[in-house]
Length: 158
Image (cartoon, rainbow, N blue to C red; front, top):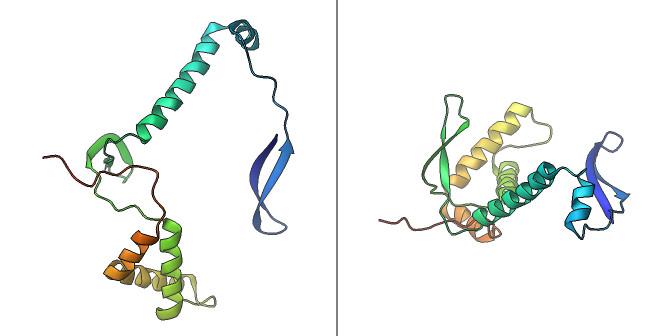
């Protein structure tokens, strides 16, 4: 089995994926082996089982038909543990949006490699504002985005 990690390489100034051979120990086949592996500590076994149980329950909750909600934000704009009503959003592929905005900024709003950072940001902000006001572009982004893994409710119950 090969395990991988991504690192940023200063020689190439790019992300590089590295691999390493890894041979896991054989799977545990009995509770006696599990107890021995965890040093005969039942609390460690229960902690591992509960972590797996929680991961499974979170995965099931993410894929349930229940609606998603937005968060109440604190004074710093950070999410709290309190939820608002059902989220009213249209999820799309962020990379697709960024690519469209950058292309429009280059073609129509003065974005150039030689421009200052402020000028580049201004051109992209103008392009984004333009995209937001164009139903055809919004429709394109919606249609071209891959299906989102989180289910979204389109109707609210009354």
